[in-house]
Image (cartoon, rainbow, N blue to C red; front, side):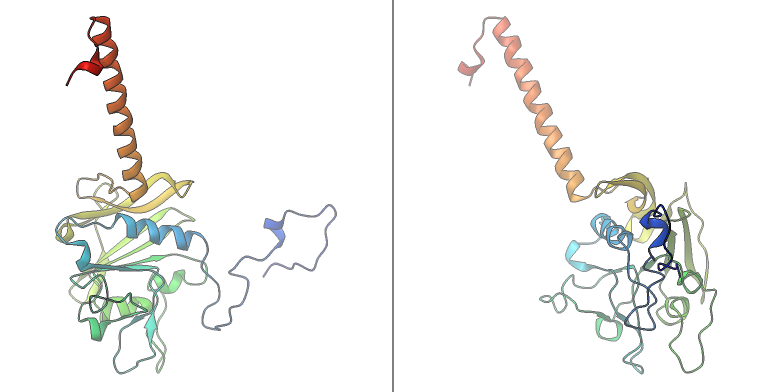
Length: 256
């Protein structure tokens, strides 16, 4: 942990002296740090662009940083994926309520895909490099692979901009082959890959959903911008046509 009691002259920049969230303890001793801004923006971009063409929106559910309960014999055991998607369940629980958690034995459908955003302190577990201890909850990898048998598992590091994808083959995860850097999911007619662009006014590489062909699935903000541009273009075309008619001695206002 950074020693913040040492005084320097002249003072060092705060970024070099103040502790990060990963240095600060949590009220929960099992959670060493708090989510950063990236853990807010990236899951939201995934949610906004998760639009399978072959599923109705009201039969899709996306969760981020939500308790995922997986073992009916251990009711207090859960994992909290940074983002996960389920197809074939009501968008609202029992068709009326927003979920407080996702309980697999009540829902009856396991996630299709889970995403973990790699962070210091959790990277080894996220990549399956740690083992569960007897009598304690299994690791994330063990839960996704062996208990929930989530077909697709993806990790993304914003520090290295590396995406790693795994596909369940038999009873084990294997590295998934990427097509032009994208994970193809034909069952939902989508692919998942990296995009360089501005989201929430932050320009960087983002993980986002695309079509199988690699075309971007637009966010609501992007759709609104496209619609506004189309309206502007239509108005400009109308203005040019009106000007041309006036050159020909025709009053466009009298045309019906």
